[in-house]
Amino acid sequence: MPFELFIGLRYLKAKRKSTFISLITLISVAGVALGVMALIIVLAVMTGFEEDLKEKILGTNAHVVVLNSLGAVQDYPQVMKKIQSIDGVVASTPFIYNQVMLSTGKNVSGVVLRGIDVATDAKVTNLHKSMVEGDLNSLEPEVGKTPGVVIGKELAKNLGLFLGDTVDVISPMGNITPLGMMPKLNRFRITGIFNTGMFEYDSTLAYVSLKEAQQFLGLGDVVTGIQLRVRDVYKTGELAREIDRELGPPYHARDWMQMNKNILFALKTEKSVMFIILTLIVLVAAFGIASTLFMVVMEKTRDIAILKSMGATSRSIMRIFVFEGLIIGVLGTIMGVLGGLLVALNLEPIVSVIQKLTGFELFSKDIYYLDHFPSQVVASDVVLISVTAVLISFAATLYPSWAASRMAPAEALRYE
Image 1 (cartoon, rainbow, N blue to C red):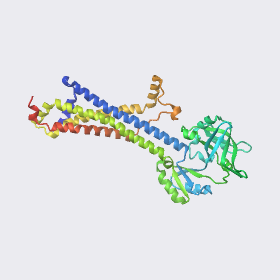
Image 2 (cartoon, one colour):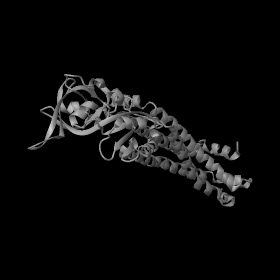
Image 3 (tube, rainbow, N blue to C red):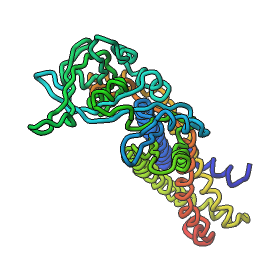
Image 4 (cartoon, rainbow, N blue to C red):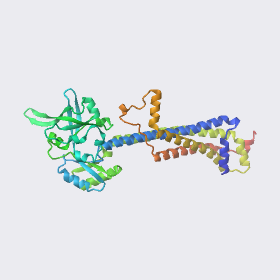
């Protein structure tokens, strides 16, 4: 063990006359630990929310959507066949997208009507996994029966609809008559209710079969676009550009990141800002480390003078106090990492216990539309936080250590 490290460890031990300094040292360790712990927990929660949101977006929407700039997609089976020959595309399905109104006689709501191919939609989206009542297969047209429609849980609640009820679907793009444009109306039966966990989707989406949508909207054998499922969801941008090159104008592909870039950018920015804000806690703890070292230097003036008289260099004196400050920082970082991981990995049961003890609901599932408290620890975040905390602690030791190394032995021993 280098003698600088040995002496630095000795200075951390409390003596009767330096109890106050030892107390400040403990507070500095606790400050670093709390800062690191807060950073790990908050970033784990924000990462959990981000991943949960991505899962819901990708579960309801496709990874890539191919559209025609001039309007509807003609001869879509051939276009799908061409797209699926591109490396990286796993599956494809056609869809129709239009805005309509749902009316029950008493309540009316504007929704987005999606026509889907039931046979291939399950290969691209996870809508079938979000069904809480009924089944997507019930959308298949049956002769002599009212066509089916699947709506979101929130939309069903707003309109007072239940499984088996009927609802009028009204399209503003209706038939032209001598009196003007007359809205087109058709009656559908509620054959399923889904719950994605996202209010925006559950309150504004309604699904019918592709054939029913084509017939109701008078589109003929065309579709709005083609949805794709890809192998790597984080390389959809490159794949979209490849699809554009392969199909050429007027077709263009948009990936899920482009379609949700506002909310994804907001989450990323918020995570970065929270990291900066919570790092200030570690900076405050670093001031505690600097204060502790200043007090130790003042108390150990005679020891420094004796060490210099015995041949210790200024660099060695500086190393003694740098080691002492680093020990405080590293110890606080280790305690913070252990505490942060313990809480972050068991956050949901901890929140449940706190809610039971206090009777206060910290996390309302009805408001946030999540069936669990998301928390995901990322190893790179933990490493970044640990390295940042140690570097801040190291920076806090430099000036007090430099001041100790500049001390002249004669001046230090003058009044001893």
